[in-house]
Length: 228
Image (cartoon, rainbow, N blue to C red; front, side):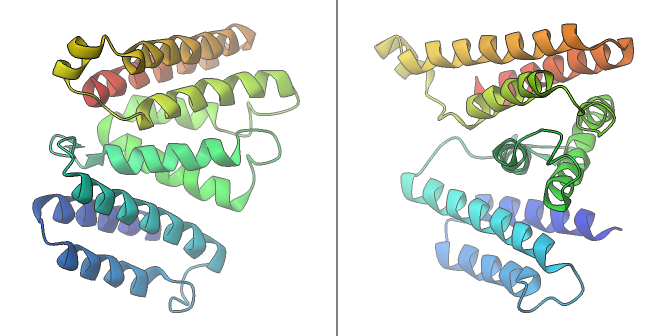
């Protein structure tokens, strides 16, 4: 098993462990075990830059878990794990990719590539064809030269990131408030799709067009499953 596969497995196990236990001290103890294993001052087997990024993921997930415990959130990852796929990890990785930015400068950057490879491994657990579509769209073969086209792709995925990271609200709350959040989420989905469809139209190769269609279809499925 490759290093990044082992890392993802341990992150998934940490999330599942944390969701089952109300004891914050036990969760913190597991978190510190991960820190001891992946902190760049301790681990000499993995590149320090990559370890720094692993620590970002570990710290972000720990912070989210602890915040959820404090808020007693009902929107936990029961049902978050399908054949090993973890929605929380997926969101963390996709968020980091859009924060770095999908463009012809970052596409070959070591940090971007590590996040991309981790993302592809996580998506593959859920849907191999979706993983292949993401891999094609995030490859250097496509992200070259045309800054406007690249911006369309990045903007489309970034809007899906906003939607996936939005705070879920209960059905009762939707009816009570006729919520603006719900409307905003619908608008975000439409905006994201419009960017990605425009990107699709700008792609000359039919293979790339089909990859965009698959990514849109799969992201819609993820939103429906985890955000509604």
